[in-house]
Image (cartoon, rainbow, N blue to C red):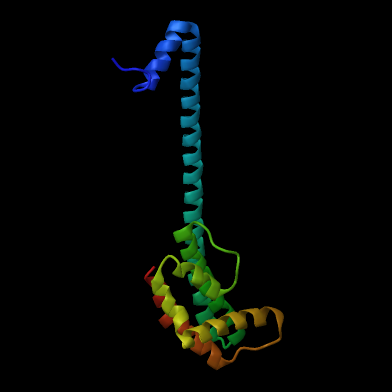
Length: 182
């Protein structure tokens, strides 16, 4: 025969049944209602999370598509000799592509325009991106993209043809290649 020490649930039930069957039934109903409420609460939480994930996936795809639209625009602007706008579009391509990957991998992305900060965030999840930050030449080009973006928005500084062509080559051949593996 088990005692309450070995099977506390049966001991409590037995004690309650002996004491007051009505109290036992009320307690049992309360426990069942509590359990049903917790299950429903968990179902509601799961449904909310699924909706948020779906919205995040849709938002991520919008970021990715817009990113490539900016790259197409940058290439067109180079053909039109609009160097400043081409560089801004290249930066937008890089920024949105990084945010796409951050959203896809982590579920969110920081509100920043810094390409290097976004890359650092992603290197925590995929060390292959360290190559973008470990090369001095890559760092200089990322800095140039960031500086050109900020300058074009706030200062009357013009990008040169050499800058635009060098940066579009970097974005296509280096930056996009690193991100294609994520």
